Structure formats: structure tokens, C-alpha cells
Length: 335
Image (tube, one colour):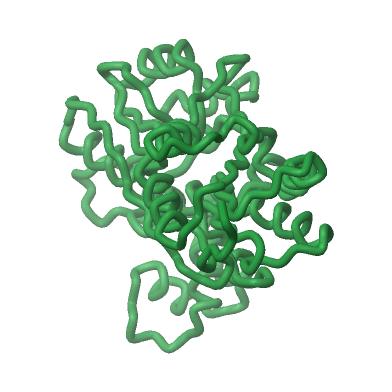
């Protein structure tokens, strides 16, 4: 069993300091970096705080991830979701079991859990199977019409509408969409509400858009490729809505290499608000998706439902907010 001394040894602080940090003692004068390191080390080692109330059974929460460990390292959005779940567990002395959908033995890893948080896009059959496996379950970042499934997703549709209305208010009409295609477990294509919102917006404003849509992957290299293809085809939008900040960053590079300027020639707005978005040149206007908070909410729902024996499922949409920086400007072109 992992002890406070084990954590103290790895973090280079006293056991007393570790204890006070894990008990959220704000009177202890240590840096935020040290606090963060202690919580992360406790989570990584699987530390479980002793419960002084012997009548209350320990809670064990399972985290099942739809993607691989390597994919998570390359995707800041899902990394923050998982961090939100784990930080909630550490602060509330909840045991953690973690597995990937691709693990052959993932059910063995999660079999003793009091509840599950499933992160990512699971196929319908997987969702049904998991509900049979554990009836206290929350899916994060996945819509599901399953009557027994609780889901938390960010409101992609409304966020996209807000982004496009903002570009419209700046005088833009010729707005390109650079998106990605995701697949649930297997070959089930995931419907992206960002694309649906974009198409409806363009139709309602009677703007031709067929040549302004490109979809590939949610990566910087994909954004660069898609933007290059569009510009080399002599399709030059006045603005771009990118379905991720990674895509937007790649698009900015392609725009600049063609001798065009952001935002003077082409405005661009991203999605996620990842850690790099404020350091691009120019700093990226983006829609902030509260992925870390979604992880915290998801863990809390499973924990509360398990302790109170709540069975009623919820379908929760979490709003996004716009972060205005310098990558968008008024359109002065005749569109």
C-alpha cells in the first residue's frame, strides 16, 4: 500500500507537508508547482487516503479510455478530461483503476469498480455492453440516446454557431470549415455537430459552401494540408473556422507560406483553447471547451450516484465560451 512517506520521497518534501497538501490545507506555504506535483504523484502511485469513518466503504472508480495511451499524449483535450477525473478522485480519496478499450483484459481491470467514467467515442454496442457490465456509468464527450446512459458533452453546435456569428459580425461571408473525421470503436463514423452547425449557418445565409469544407484529422499537419489544398485550388476564404486549435495552427502556417496574412487577409478561429493557442502568431481566437471541468463533473456524478444509489440518467451539455485574441479582424474584401 502506498503511504504518505512514499509520496514525500518522490516529491522531495516532508510527509507532514504531503499530508497537509492532500487535505487541501491552504495555510501551508508551498508553491502551486509543489502542490500539483504532490497530487499528480499521489494519483500515479495509486495513493488512497485512509477513511476515518469505518462505516463508510471505500469507493473505487474506473476510467475507461476509448483511445490508446499514445493518442492521449498527442491530444491535449482528452488529456485534460482524464486529469479532471483523476484530480477529483485524489481530492476525495477515491481509488482509481484505469484501462484502455484496446486492452484485452480491460474488464478484469475494472471489474471491482463502484462506477465507471468512459472517455471518448464508444460505439452503440460498446455502450450497451458497458451498461450491462456496470450500471453506474458516465460517458464523457459522447452523445448517446441509450435510455440508461448518462452523458456529458461540450455543446459543439452552439459554440460553432457563436463562432460563425462572430465572423459574420466582422463582415465575413466566405468562411471555410476545416474539420476532422472520428470513428467510434470499429468503423462507426461519429457525427460532428460542428459540421452540422456550419452547413446550416451557410444555408440560412444563402452562402455557397461546398468548396469551402475539408475534413481529415484533428492534427496540425492535417490543418496545414487541408489549408494548402484549398489555397492551391485558388479557393481563398476571408475566414476559416477550424474544428480544433491543432488544425487552426497548421492552417496559419499554410496561409503564411502562401504570402497571405492572418488576420488581414484571412481571419481564423479555432476550437478547444489549448495551451499553445495564446502563443501562436498572431494569438489564436478560439472557443474554450472546458474539458478539465467535464472530467471533474463526470467523476462527481459517478461518485454521488454510487453513494446515493441514483439510477436516473442525465444528458448534460456543457457550454463553451469564446476567447477573443488577435487572429480575427474585420473583412474589407468584396465577398
